[in-house]
Image (tube, one colour):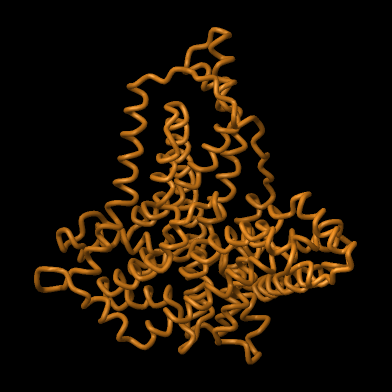
Amino acid sequence: MKRSTFKSGTWAAVILAATGLFALFSVLARGLPAVPGVLRGDWDVVLATLGLVGVGLTLSLLIGGGLALLTWLARLPTAADLLISVSYLIPPFIGATAWLAALGPGNVFTGRAILPVYTPFGIELAWVTHYAPLAYLLVRAALSAQGEGPLLAARVHGLNSVQGLRRVVLPLIWPGVGAAAVLIGLSLLGNFGVPAVLGFPAKIYTLSTLAYARLLNPTLADPLSAASGVAWLLVVAALPALLIRPRTPAGDPASDFGLPTPRRLRRLAWAAVSLWTLIALVLPLSATLLLAFKPSYRPGFTLDNFAGALVLDSVRRGLWHSVWLALAAAAICALLGLWIARAGQGSRLASAAQRLLTLPYLLPGTLLALGLILAFGRTALYATPLFLMLAYLLRFLAPGVEGGRSAATPGAANLEFAARLHRVRRWATFWRVTLPLARPHLVASFLVIYPLALSEVTLSALLYAPGAETAGVGVLNLLSEGNLRGAAALATVLLLLSLPTLLVPRGRA
């Protein structure tokens, strides 16, 4: 197919990439003069952020990587992958709310705090239980890519199991560890929901929540510049991870030499998987559900907490906005991502624009939100649901483009070329040939983006205005009012709305 067929996709990529870059540079230009003041007055927050991120990253890699190595050695089935990774599908701020329901003041079990969750410990607990499964999936993929050949070779050369792991297997999985470190480090650095839920009540700030606090501080002469100065430090902290390019694991995932697995090792692996599932998933979610359905001063289970939350106009509006924004953003990002990905074939300009489109997804969402305020704060778009839609499109377009790339198979290109030879117009080719062939990949992109947009809270907290709330903001507002049961009920509604997409196997999408 000729390049002109998807020329409009190239320009769409260029325009969106330029918008994202303009927002980023607006933040950097506005915040540069405020950086020295931030360093003088908030150096403790910088150190606290780096410390929290460092501990969270280390624990996530150790726990997730350890589980990956153990389940790989024991050759557990894919059911173990599902049990370990399902907690990653729960949005972080809902996970933090779940830990409040399980261990915090007013929890459903004792009514008094079991562990201090309004502390750095609570933040780390919510972070690790969410991001350790990501480390597990990436390290396990690296191990599976190698097969059992390296371990068999180590045994052939007389190395025992420990020596084979240390000298042969572990060096081969560093690509998976590196990829996990980059993704988890960037995610922790930009995470807003968990520090907002568990840090704000105890005045524990990270750089993301500090930017939010500066933006809403009425005592500052220029809150936007102060928040942009904090955003500068987020960029500097994220640069090392952005500059690292992890290698893709190489190997044959189908290689299986049938090495015997000791029964004791399998029992140990299943015990570890069961313990992780109990701690990271069953305990917090069961506490959230019990708190959501249990009335305050009488036994039994009712829907009173749901009714009490949904009677609020802001909560109902937030749910409505979150649902239609998530559905629209997921559909548009999937379709536009396919169009842009097709435009990038053979076009240097489109390929460069696609790479730039990954920045809003990888960089902390605080940067994008502040940049959009600076770029569009004086327009009619500001403080409307459509403003959030623009932010969601810029934030979540990268997964849509990635799904579009996976749909670009040689067979699809040949059929598109055949359609053009028969003088089928480009839009007819796209709708009749490209879309049907790419449907599984579009569905997969939709299933990835929809839950992310539905429970998005970083952009929403900075960009919403009265009348344009989202459900994530509603949960934060209920928690700030001390209404833990109402927050648990609203979090349960969000989980129920996400459940259909979470249950669809990604491999069949």
